[in-house]
Image (cartoon, one colour):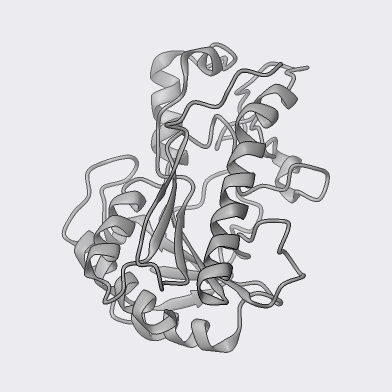
Length: 266
C-alpha cells in the first residue's frame, strides 16, 4: 500500500460560502520530503539553485493578499510541496508535451535540461502518493463550488522568469509583465476581458506567451462549461529579485490587481 499523503501536502483555504472563485497556487512552495529528496541526484547547493529557478516564488503570498482585499473572499487551493515532488498541473500520461524535456507529472530533468532523477526512476509511486490525491482534492473543491453557487471560476496563479530558461518549449514569443493563459472551452470572453483590465494596472498584458493554457480538473475538462478557468502568469521582475530572491513593492500592486479580477468574475 502507498504511504498516506501528508496533510500538509496541499491546503484548501476557505473563502466566502457564496464565492465561486478558487485561486489555485500550484508552484509556490520549495518543500521536498526527505524520502523524495533521496531520489534526486543534485547535491544540496545545486538543488537550491534549481528551486530558485523552478519555484513560482511568493505567488501564495500574492493570492493570500488578494483574498484579503477582495470584496467577496475567494477560496484558495495551495500546493504546500515543491513541484519537484510532483507537478499537479501536468497531464499524467502521454498527452503532456513537457515529457519531451523530462518534465511530466514527475520531473526527471532540470530547468537547464540536466539530470534531476536517474534513468529508470519509477515515477508511479510519487504519482500515486501525491499527484492523484491532489487531483481528487481539487476536483472536490470545484464540485463544492458548483454545488454551492452553480459555477466555479479557477484562477491559476503562476510566475515566470524574465529570461527564458532552457526547458521552455515556447520561449521565442513575447514575455510581457502579465501573460494570461487560456483554454478554448473554459475561458469565456468575460473573465478574459476582466483580467486584461485588472492587470493592465501592472503593465502590458499578453495572451498565451510564453505559457498557455490553464488548469481544470480532468473530470470537468472539456465537459462542463460551468467551470471557467484562466491562468495568470506574472513576470518575476515585476515583484521580486530573480532568481529566488525576496519580494518587493510590486507584490502589493499585483495583489490589488488579482483582487480586482476576483471581484469582477465573482
